[in-house]
Amino acid sequence: MTEQRKTFNHSMVYVFQQALNALQLGSIYALIALGYTMVYGILTMINFAHGDLFMIGAFFCFLIAFYLKLSFVPTLLLSMLGVACLGVIIERLAYKPLRKAPRVSAIITALGVGLFLENFTLALSPYPKHIPPLLENTTWTVGSLSLSSLQIIVIVLSLVLMLILDFIVQRTKAGMAMRAISWDKTIVPLMGVPVNKIISLTFAIGTGLGGAAGMMYALAYPVIDPYMGIMVGWKAFISAVVGGIGNIRGAMIGGFILGAVEIMVAAFFPSTYRDFVAFTLLLILLIVRPYGILGKPQPQKV
Image (tube, rainbow, N blue to C red; front, side, top):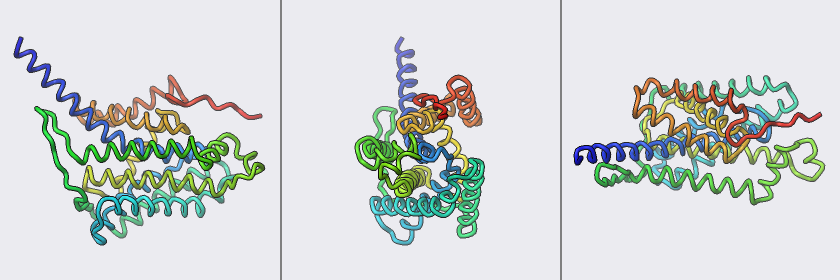
């Protein structure tokens, strides 16, 4: 009986350990997914360059930490600001002229922007980079359970950023304008809402969160390269679709769900099944509930 109890306790500790890992990874997916869902909510467009903006955030973190040798908070703020400014520039130069064009034109442009960011970064930095430690990572051990200060910071900071975003969207005039544009962008200008400024603000916030995710990913998994945003970006897109693309809270939930699925699959099955299960999850959900967990069917305006 004692041996069975020890085995049970060991199994529970292992599950809790994997749950912490899932929270860490899910936090990053959720932050990136918010960028996808915010842009889609306003422009009904999938910004496929968003994963590469996440990658740019990681490289901004590297440049600031390596050359300017700033501490964690200034590096985070500058990385978010840099990616947010880049997101606004891309929106103004590449996406704004295509708002009335067929939707496929914007998709092709977004893919082209992503390829440009990847190859531009590759030309400047062809080899993987290692992020300098910005924080002293302390690990606490409780029995067989290990918890690091970096895990806590990633999870808590991600949740704080998500709560701030939710407050902005639900409780501020800018957030009300975002929701109004997502409902009917043709009527909103008649009500005095500066549509172009709100769209740029949306891109700035969404890409800024992607920059924060890039920095936290770089600290948690400290080797970065120009192609790191491809698969992570696709998985964050899956998170947004699972939660209900266009729904901010749904994107958060989808990120944590996908993080949990990936970590638990890798914990109990061969790690090669991880991506297979993640994409199968998307396929099944699209068949059963095409509009996601918190999404709603879009009414056809006539």
